[in-house]
Amino acid sequence: MTLPRKVRAVVFDMDGLLVDTEQVVFRAMQQAAAGIGGEVPFQVFQRMVGLQHAASDLILVEHFGKDFDLEGWSATVSGHFQAELALAGIALKGGVVEILNHLDAVGIPRAVATSSNAQAVQQSLGPYGLVERFDVLITRELTTRGKPHPEPFLKAAEALGIDPVECLALEDSHNGVRAAHAAGMMTIMVPDMLDPTEEMRSLAVHIARDLHEVRELIAAQSS
Image (cartoon, rainbow, N blue to C red; front, side, top):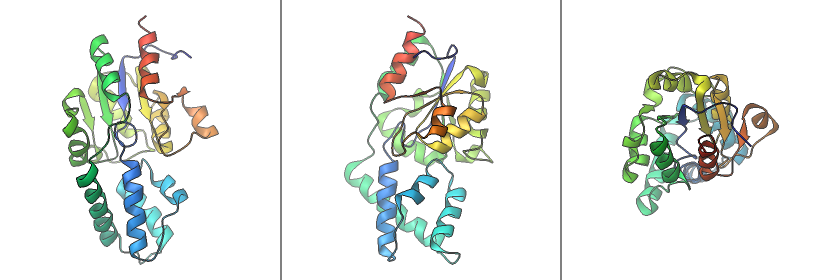
C-alpha cells in the first residue's frame, strides 16, 4: 500500500491513538454506572468515542433518561478515572516515539487535534515529554464544533500552514475518521476499541495495525 499523496504534515488524534485512555474511560463509566444500579453497554460507549463532552452528554441523557444527573455522573467518572491513573498511569500506545522520531528526521511538522481539553493533553502527554514534540495543539477550547465536524482538523492544518489535502490524519475513532475525511485529509484509521466498518474503509485511505505501520508508510515516500 502507498499513500495517495506526499505527506507534508501529520495530524494526530490523542485518546486511543497516542495514549491508551479510552479503555480507562470505559472502565470508569462502568464503575459509575454500577454505582447507580445501571450500565453503559459497549454499543452506547462506541457512539461517544471521539466526541466532545457536550455531544456525549446527549447520548448519556438518551440512555439514562431526561432527569439523569450529568454533573454527578461526570464527577464520579472522573474520580474513578483519576484513581486508576494514580495506580497505573496512562500507557503510551506502541510506535508513538518511533513515528515522532521519524517525523523529526525527515522534517515533517505535526499537530494534535483532540476532543479533550488542554489540561487532559498535559496530563496524558506531559509525563512522556511529548507535548513539546508537537508544533500545534488543537484542543476542545479552540473549537466551536467538535468531531465528527472537520473543524478540529481544519484548524490544525491552518495553524501548521499546510493545505489539508497534503496532511495525513491519524485516528482511532469512527467520529474522528469522519471529521478528518470531511476536512479533505488523507486519513488512516488505527483501530483501538472500535473495529473498522465498511464506512470507515470507504473514508480512510488505509486501516493500519499500529503506528509502526504508519511510520513505515511515511518512510516509504522518501526511500
